Length: 378
Image (cartoon, rainbow, N blue to C red; front, side, top):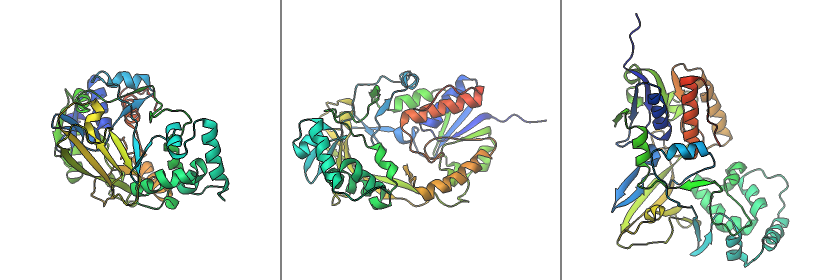
């Protein structure tokens, strides 16, 4: 006689993927247990209250999507404001608009028209002897010219990834928008904003009727924990799950230096990037500006990209050729593993935006629960 286990799903990780999967499973009448090794739920979208300000504890998170069903989905749990991400770049004390647009070109060259800006870039690119770009640096130089690259891209990127730009894959440059309009909106997506009151309200709504246990590390007691459920939904590091049998996948980490300041406005913008090699951090976030706060004090966070060891806190997968090849071995092993569903940035070793994580979780839940995936990632 088969004994029915207490839970249908053990969900490892309470970030967006795990929380969305739990919500969808509960709607379908399934019983879930969500565990997380951190002391709070929410993964990297967790916000903490400091001086009445919602501080993005694990880096800036701005929701943006063109996927109307996903936008409607998150609006079940929170009201979104109309925050638009318009970061600035600080280079040797001079400020430039991001993403690269006509305002940036005017600040650099005093060009007034797209034709003038295009001509300036073409003149700079013409002096390069690059036919077939082989790395990030060469692709960036061909796309934007040496002046923008040297001032606003090279050193920031090398700090972010902890390696020379010539050692980075060229596809990374595709993440940087380039436009010839006076438009400082970093994203082109139709739906954008930050949830009023922070992201915790979304996580709390998703997990409202699901049992959650915090300070529980799956990797230290996986046998007992797995035995509690019919299936496991795993959102942690896929190489850790398989005990690094194919070697370690490389991740970049972040160190956050938080400071409360006795002023109501420190930098006048939510995000300012620091592009100088001499500045050790990549950006300063002033959290109150995400929600147009009027508090008497302010909270800033300096972000320092760092290398991490096996037991460090992973943030960004390093999707170079070596790591991508290694991940394929883990993906094959995952597909052959019964009763485990892998999902999210760490389990899929993939850079996901929030809307993509949510769409992926809904699709995998639908496939698991109904065998009819309905959502597509944009």
